[in-house]
Image (cartoon, protein in one colour):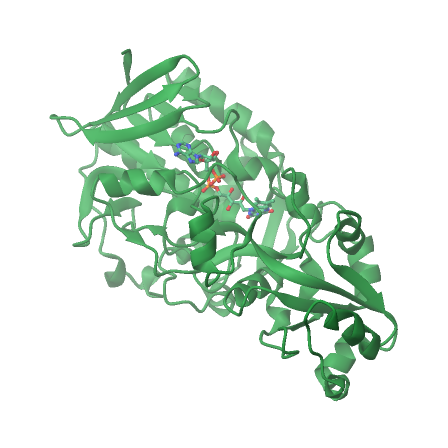
Length: 443
Ligand SMILES: Cc1cc2nc3c(=O)[nH]c(=O)nc-3n(C[C@H](O)[C@H](O)[C@H](O)COP(=O)(O)OP(=O)(O)OC[C@H]3O[C@@H](n4cnc5c(N)ncnc54)[C@H](O)[C@@H]3O)c2cc1C
């Protein structure tokens, strides 16, 4: 079997892996990027391309009050530098605008990825698509041997350091069941990310944090089935933040104004199916406006209807209740006298949908220190193994501060540190302990 030698080996060619590999190549390392899918780009290539983050740590804390938020502050601190770096590959498509719990700019990310690939190759590295990694072992000299298969057959790669950036475990149906109390969830993310990188990190002694049950996702109308990644954005009912969400007993269980992504996690923790209602005014605005600047304008109620989703309209709450009763919802006539409900639904037509949570990526994953080095169960670094992006545990927990910015910031950091270690400039395990730094005080 042909074995090729590199300084740094990156698993996964999404935003985190390509950022890591480019940073390592820029530091002079020869990098191999092994990608499971037949194309590079991962989730970023099908994403909204909106690189955003909360403006301050306080804003992040307001959005995410979870106990497992350890690395999130890095995303806030790294936002400006991430934009400066990305703008070196391609100019932003939009000026900076408010987005979710922060602000951001949209990019042509596939173009940025082609430029990153060029940098990796110029430094003597290579991006290998369609690789199924089977195992990873430590060499007798402390380096790593990764084995796998390509279209051409068995292959192996040797390297001084490894970066795990395979995008989480949402494509594993068991993970989706676990995160939704057994109800299961639709997949709204990369179909190749089934926890492969996490398993490889564990095989080297790495520790996972699967207690962090947080995830990023959106609500879909029940019954719609995404057949291609464009459906991930088309079906997301972003307007739920202005609606009313009920469980089958007709009870509100979430603060809907915390955003559709938080409504999706609340629903997953509360039985997995709900009834979402919104007003005529919200429908008109949602159908006419892009969700964030530069994103497509589309009527998501209509698209869901056209694809067989459980949606409807009613001229009054009583009419909605009658229709929803056929789906197993028991809505009391008293709900109409709730001031929040009457204010949000207005006096006109009510749009409604039975909704289910759809997951984009998992927040639990591989534990790491402040430099992105993977930790073992004793909290010590393994030495030479790094993690970035959605595979990294504890960036977010009960809220979301942006996946792309998190991938750039943690990816670049892992790339920088892994290449320094591989090239012999910095020893392994030189990170400050997380709890000792005020920057990481949100554990
Ligand atoms: C529809 C959609 C819209 C989004 N919009 C936005 C947005 O506008 N703004 C924002 O901030 N975030 C957005 N996100 C989230 C953001 O795209 C992700 O959080 C981010 O791209 C994750 O990057 P990553 O590199 O960690 O993972 P990924 O991009 O998922 O990359 C992981 C890569 O690893 C590969 N892989 C998986 N398993 C293996 C294995 N065993 N071996 C080798 N390779 C493997 C995968 O194929 C993939 O290419 C969106 C996501 C989706 C799906």
